[in-house]
Length: 262
Ligand code: F6R
Image (tube, rainbow, N blue to C red; front, side):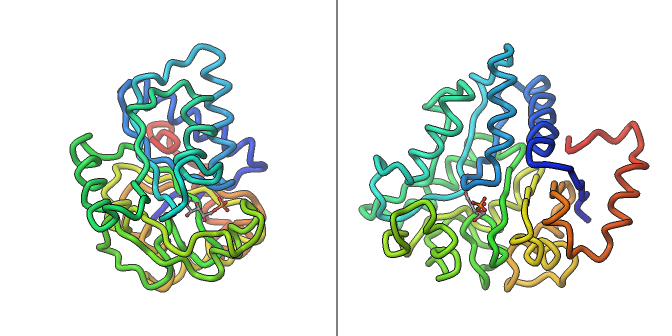
């Protein structure tokens, strides 16, 4: 099952994951990162940006974003093209041509999923995939009911996801109805998964994903199928986990030959 690490703060989570990414890049300078957007991964990007300012070179790193809104102009500040550029590419000193975001333009959308899958395969696959989790249990924009075998494709957002994401727009009506997202099958092909979750609002989804049955109704439960998944949560997001003491204990007793995340 996934290793669960409970941290004291978002900043601590960011530092932990950034440290693992630095170790990955030291072994493999052109490592392929799977990039999530939204609030959750920001502490990781901030911690990495600090390391870059201190001399870490990420210019050879390649990356694939999880998802994009369909029909939102690329130039819109909340398109994931813009968000990835602003929050990730620029502060981390990545090479823009090496960082990919699904093509959400309506023209050619029928083939956009397949093109994205081809690009991921051509890169050799994702080495480390960062994930957040939606309050409805989604990862990427794989909403409840998504097939565990799904690949990159268009998904209709649930009302709950659109309400949750309305904070990035002037109103919920401006949140696009459709997204193009890596599938659960795509995500499961990554060599390592790191799912982060913070705050009480995520506690229910985290418990259902980690300790509930495998179910398309809780898309994040797919991570139970992955052999190398790590879940980094704060106390609030961990608060509904039944086996919390066991996870704490397992982490406290972690053998020295078993490095964190990598
Ligand atoms: C974003 C993504 C989503 C978010 C999730 C949580 O690329 O794929 O699954 O990770 O909606 O969003 P935040 O982090 O804003 O709470």
